[in-house]
Length: 92
Image (cartoon, rainbow, N blue to C red; front, side):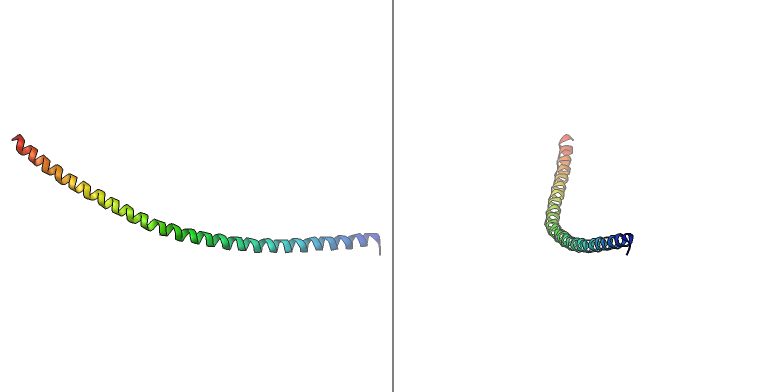
């Protein structure tokens, strides 16, 4: 065997080993990435359920306040009309 053949064989063995090690490393990285994505998805699902459970009472409170405001504006308009009619009667 020639020295050139020995160097080529050693180089091929090293390149093959590095390629296999890189492949195994990439597979492990992809597995960890999959686990991380699954955990993130669970966190996002929990966040969605929490925000929807918080949004419902806030929406109810907002509707209550808007109803209260509309009721006050109705009574203000009613009393303003009543006051305007009394002012017109007093002015005549």
